[in-house]
Length: 366
Ligand SMILES: [Zn+2]
Image (cartoon, rainbow, N blue to C red):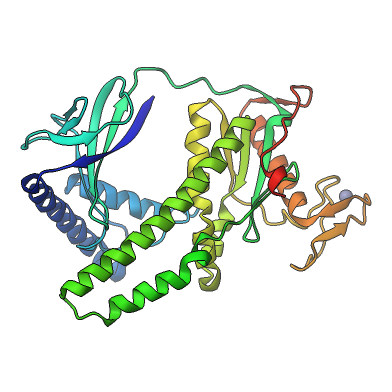
């Protein structure tokens, strides 16, 4: 399996200058290519493949592919800014030791390698955060084959997840994970820092300082969100063999300007991404349901579909089979049922007589 390990590096001033020149060149190529592709897109509405400019363009190409993929919640690529995050990719003559990494054309860079790297190092991506920290992401093939996907699934370990805003996730077992709303907690602070940045004169030292302060606050917010997503996805994947999520909803809801900020804060796509790679590491399944219009108003017991179900109705009774439903748990059950169909269509078996269901994480939080 190809694994990625990110380590902090400590370039000398000379090395940092060299890296920054390189970041600048990469940024230039990326922006140039974006300009070329954008004018083509705006003028003719057509896509232009960007292969000639190598990695910068491969990245930009990926960003455009995501944008054109209706299943992905990606936005139109933006120009990279001088003060934004920088990166450069190296895949030839790269190496690393106990406390250093090496890329072509410069001496070893000091690094804190916190984890033993196994197997072949295939590439190094260097980056500089907005707050001025340098990192190296080391991609290595550990030589161990990826675990075989679980073929006979225990239905008790197949989980449907309905993602929302009040609750970040409600699963088909009835567990509710509250939405931590990280942005809401720090938004006053961010707004204050943003204002003080605007008050500073362009090009002044004060402005640089204010920018750094704002960037650090944003970084802390992103770290807190990522940390939460890592813990939640770890628990969900550890307790289940297959997790089913709905993805189309995300892209559609992002189009709503009022909602998009809250959705970005909830971090659904970040959570799905982490669920996906953690599942893969254990031979488990992450199933994405593309299209499921009536997950809330279809009875998960008998399949009866209501004409309408207004948003404020949290509980309802099925007129056909009299089952009492909680709106969100019913939706999660429908998502789960769709996922099981998809698993079976792929030739896997899902049987009810398996192991016992473990108590789940979110019960405590609910
Ligand atoms: Zn029913």
